[in-house]
Amino acid sequence: MNLHLRVVLVVLVLDALVGCSSASSPSLGTDDDAGNSVDSAIDTGTPTSDAGDSTGDAVTSDAAPITAPADTWTWIDFPDSKCASGTTTGIGVNLHPGSKKLLVYLEGGGSCTDGQTCWVTPNPQGYTSGYGAAEFAKESAVKNRPMMGRDASSGSPFIDANLVFVPYCTGDYHSGTKMKTLDVPGGSPRDTYFWGGRDLDLFLARLQATVPDADHVWLAGGSAGAVATVLDYHKVQSAFGVRTDVIDDSGPPLGIVTDGTTLALWGTQLASSCSSCRTLEEVMLDIRATHPESRFAYIGFQYDVVVANGYGLAIADYPTALEKLLTDMKGDANFQSFVVQNAKSKPQHVVENHFDDATMTKAVEAWLTTMVSDGAWSSVKY
Image: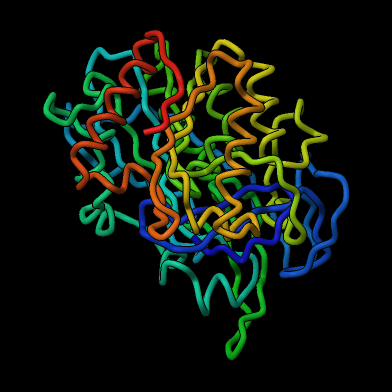
């Protein structure tokens, strides 16, 4: 998860499902040109265009319902969508006829802000190049992640829900709306589509048409996808207009302001109620204030070098920063956490990636089942 962490909206990007190892944290400001930024007021309006910086044509969708075989993972192309490379992408769906439950899982991966990080040294290598049916056919997150399991043996609390997998190929925390022409070291300038937010709008329109009577939505993600659960919460909740809960795996919304790149570089648009937000914790607190009935589950490791690097913290200092967040949230009964007490000498990242640890996986899935079923739940240090 490309952690060249230079951000003021402490949006920590993490290595997520694709096994990256670095992350970055975006700032809320405006950008002067590709790869350079200046901190200022957050831009929550429609991004403006200039040379090498385009919002493109308006995204449209006929919002046709998705048709797919029942209880079977199926790739759905979206011709108007774009990866960073400009190639089209889509989503994976596993529809459960008659279900009014919906789980939307946002994949994690790298973040990028310039020609170097997007095209020369992207992390993981090649993730900005594209994601389509061929990549989905090999998607380990769908095949191995317990949360996405369909049969009872998976331990998933979502076996009777409609399941959606949103791949990540835009380098913008699933949040961008801009095209930037980036100078590529050793190569020619390249149009780069920070289009994650536009893509999500397209996906949500058809998902709403597919499950128009949804009565409960869960928005989940790992690493960069976990960051996106906070940045994109308002989009998802607004699309369905029902209770929307969050499962954040290893994207802790810490209240740390860092220097550097801005979300405005990508054209990220936060909820109007969050126009003064400066940290990811503030964005999350805005969600809690506007939707206190929703549940927010944070899952992570006590020592996570990817997250620590993303926030500019020494690994030894990370547990203290994480504990501060958890202490800040103790008064909110609908915010609970599951923190795995690993050793500093063995930092880990993305709990649901460690499905090979059967004992831990069982404990996490049992805790999530309580969360999802609205049972009495509490924070756990495992």
